[in-house]
Length: 183
Ligand SMILES: Cc1cc2nc3c(=O)[nH]c(=O)nc-3n(C[C@H](O)[C@H](O)[C@H](O)COP(=O)(O)O)c2cc1C
Image (cartoon, rainbow, N blue to C red; front, side):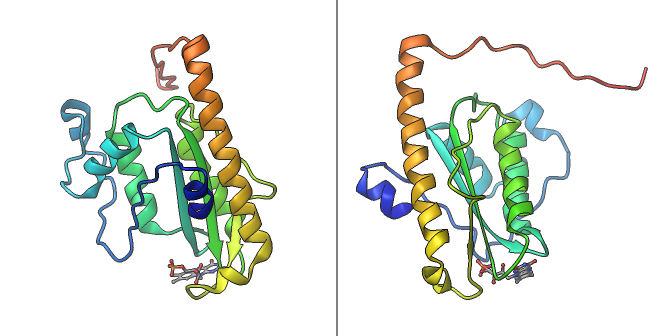
């Protein structure tokens, strides 16, 4: 994806969690009042970086049939604590595994986009690649092709949305309603 973004002159801002210790959300709701997460780690900076971006690509290895825990901790806190308008930023998710669990992980990651009115750039399969050790994915020809396709589709969508915003503006935004079943 990075190769395609570079070729098409798309500016990218990459963040890799690696081995950083990342806290999960503890539902303290500090962010309701302060508009940022109570934990002063990378999440508040990532929120600013996401606000300035037209799209977000999330890539995760598969751990026990779902996304890596640190990625979920970051995403829960990033999406819960930031309050800027995420509508029409384009999302794309990609899962990498040794063998199994990529489709569940792909679904899991896409949920951050589809709860936020973020259109999803799709590919020619459910976005996955296979490899256990670093570099092994280079042998997964189909996975690499899918990454290229997703990157091109994402660029197209971001350009189309930019033009459409100028031409039509964003759709009307409704105030959020919360259904509850306890009367
Ligand atoms: C804790 C753990 C759980 C894993 N669970 C799965 C799994 O459910 N399915 C699978 O195919 N691979 C699994 N793997 C293999 C990883 O998905 C694969 O090695 C991946 O490339 C690791 O990427 P990383 O080095 O960026 O963490 C697991 C690896 C670890 C460390």
